[in-house]
Image 1: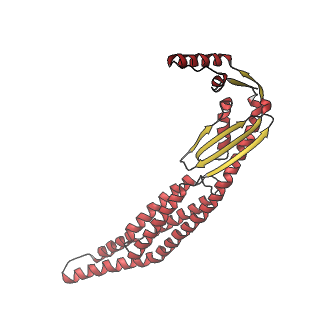
Image 2 (image 1 turned 90 degrees about the horizontal axis):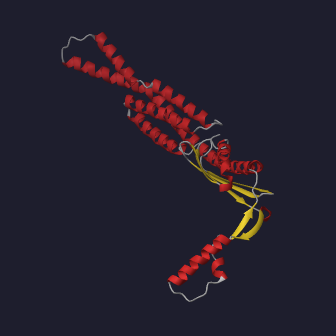
Image 3 (image 1 turned 180 degrees about the vertical axis):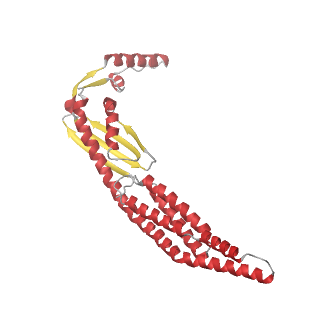
Length: 294
């Protein structure tokens, strides 16, 4: 069954190292592309995270966010940054003297600056963290795929309905085609005979019959109908494939469009031309939907 390329998933795992939260958002894209936001302390795991996601998402634009909420146990201690305090104090003195401010510099002024307090954190081995992160990313990817599969089922129903409509139109054309060939042959034969009656031409009748037969063959769309049916069968197979089908569907639609164009130009019949217009309209709607199929 096909999947949509649009989805959202979230995974969270608690551990002695704190909580890990992963959010994955996917949208349609021609290829597989990942943009990630990962804490600096975990940057070395970025490639492994992307590779893991690719196992669940084969095509589409992926936005991944990894957050690490550390527990209080991960903080060794809190200490003052004396160098920062000294720097801020000197800056405050410079401002006070420069603008001739009489107010005293108070402790509350210094403590309002960032980096005055420094929290020392315990460094962890990434090899110990990876199994937890791997589990969390997998949770988010599986959750995202559930949404993509749900939307894929909706796409499947819509595309199947439109493909059946195209098939129905092709079936109608197949029923009309033999009559069109016979009609064109009869019309051409009647015109030639009328011309020969009005004027006394010395014409090889056998040659005329051959030319009429050749013209009738040019109006024959049997091959185009056969190939169109083959493409419709290929579309159905691709829809039911468990593999990524978006690009395959798009390619088959191009081939089907080509056959339908040829069919319309060769047939030269009003009823068939109307059916060709209906088919082209459905193909365009199918192509729009296929852009969101993985």
